[in-house]
Amino acid sequence: MEDIFEFIKKIEFEIDEIDEGMLQPETNYREMEGWSSMLGLIFIALIDTEYDVTINGEELINCATIQDLYDVVKAKKQ
Amino acid sequence: MSTPFHLHNKVILVTGASSGIGKQIAISANEMGADVIITGRSKERLEETFKSLKKGNNGQLIADLQNQEELNQLVESLPELDGIVHCAGIVKPFPIKFLTQEKITETFDVNYSIQLLLMAQISRKKKLKKNASIVFSSSISAAHPHKGGALYSGSKAALESFSKVIVLEFSYLKVRSNCIASAMVKTPMYEYAQQQGTKEQMDEHVNKYPLGVGLPEDVSNAAVFLLSDASRWMTGQTITLDGGFLLGDF
Image (cartoon, chains in turn purple, yellow):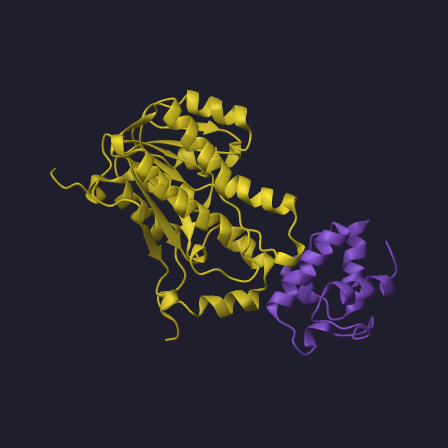
């Protein structure tokens, strides 16, 4: 799987609510301004579409940072 | 007994009977006197429902209704029906932005197409008795959609329209068709929705019900009414069962 910076770039490009440069590996995305359950759904759908990996809401909630999320996707991808 | 509130001498088909609302409707209809034919994809789980049917002459038919051949075979082996309850369905929240043909097909096949194809075959093969009653398991989200509901809400809204077309096309048989639009009911689908969201979101949602979330028997009791002659003048309607949820804040 691609590295975390490509992962971040994809999220920032695909999700209109998130601007370029807003995310770092250590960003706690659920504490970002404007975080909502809809954004959670969009994260799940983006990961499903781009990486063919299914994560559920509970897994998303258990990830604190973008790095955590990336690790979950990467682990499931293998 | 002169009360029309029973299902004696009726043969009723229930789809999606291996779990949740479909399972309970099969059990309740049987308790109220009907001979019930259940269908579902999972042999094991269908057997479990079948074992819960205590009286009468019942049947179970394992079929994946998405497979046209299995659907045809199922219809072929059916007796003439006094009632059909369509409970097969899936829920997969997905935002518009990422929809694909594959995602649309996945939900619409199970929640809409198979109901149409089943009714097509059943009517063509003349398995629909005069005065038969059709019941669809819909959702309040058909008329009150939620974010991520393009697939689920859309498919249920389509189903509610279809129910009305049945009334028009089969009026010569005096066939009735109605929907039950339920809000959150405690079923395996509920557990699944909980996994898709989070427990916090679910708890927050559950607190908006004056009467709490529903149980499968809350829906099956309404289905029994719709299948019985007690509702013989009721057709083309949707009964909302939501424990007061749509009334708003309390």
